[in-house]
Length: 492
Ligand SMILES: [Fe+2]
Ligand SMILES: [Fe+2]
Image (cartoon, rainbow, N blue to C red; front, side, top):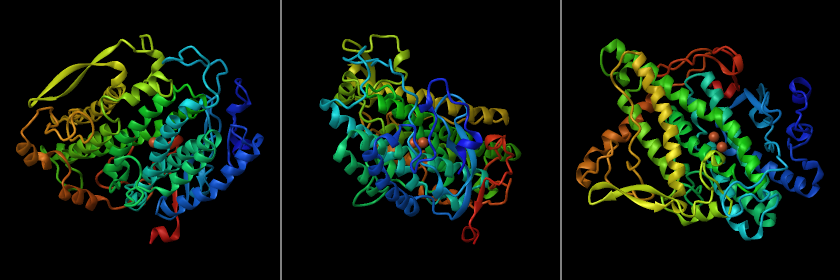
């Protein structure tokens, strides 16, 4: 492959490290060549990763896919696009550019130089944070592995595979840190990241939401919208970390993550657009029989994916989160833009919870409520997409709207766990709640009806009945571009 020769941009003024070395077996911008031991260890892990990819990566046989690869980590021109066989994708190690003057921006070490090595006292906590983040990356690939065979278009299939290879690369990002900074234990954890598998009864993935299979494309779009967005916010807190290599890794991952958000936002939007079109023709609700997903079912999928993603933020009150903050391991979303003392020792905030059948609020120390702080930022971000989808309904002249459910709806973690809260935020009695649950969450029947619509559409430029075409293609290519070439057996 000739990435450098063909499209490598001029060397960035910030130095050669922003360029990625593709002549190595493991592409990287961390001068892996200069550390033979580390290089050998990672080269030992590489074939295990490829085995994992072959076994649990996308199941649809393809010849090649129009994928983007990182060329440089600087601001402009970082991506290169070409058709590549997926197993030859150049997974590598890319860190955002180093700032030699970077100082810690929060917690008790505020103002001190960022750490280039792991301080002994924080070793266990940092490793745990990296392992939990690392575990989600391959998990989503496993969850989505069968979706290629029901892709609503070749365009969408390409986007799925792009997300998949990049989640694979995010695993590389975490494995690099484990190998480079956590010695033998880190290497063991890196092995475990390939041994735990999504939904495996004996060794499941660490977080609950990553053990549910993604069964259909509407769920995939909701997943990339709501669950990848959880990832975006977690990466946002780690990007502030005092441990500089972690911060720089996450900063670059966030750039890749933007595409995953795009796939979710536009995927749901195009689904809504198509449904709205049929609703308009009908002068009322649209039905599965008309080849689209009824708006009520889209709402149920939204309710489900939002609520399970909310659980990923953990308990509203968490001493761990406060300790991670004070010791500099994990900051807040947009830490440096916050206008406070960045230590939070005296600060408080309001927290909602259920008391005597009503939603009440109480004042809690800010340091103990950082999971909630992050979750609130996440909810605000989620609301943007819902507004956008509602705009599509409005543009179609329809009255119906989608709704982001109340934070207390369908929760299994934190103060709302098991509380009978409706999507509108009403606390019901348990019986009423149970009786209505099928009108709020996808029932077996809903999922089956959606699954029945998921017939593949492999003809270039054509789209399945339930989804509108995108307004433009990828990387300025036309919508009908041959983004994926299927293998002969994939066409059977
Ligand atoms: Fe990721
Ligand atoms: Fe992602």
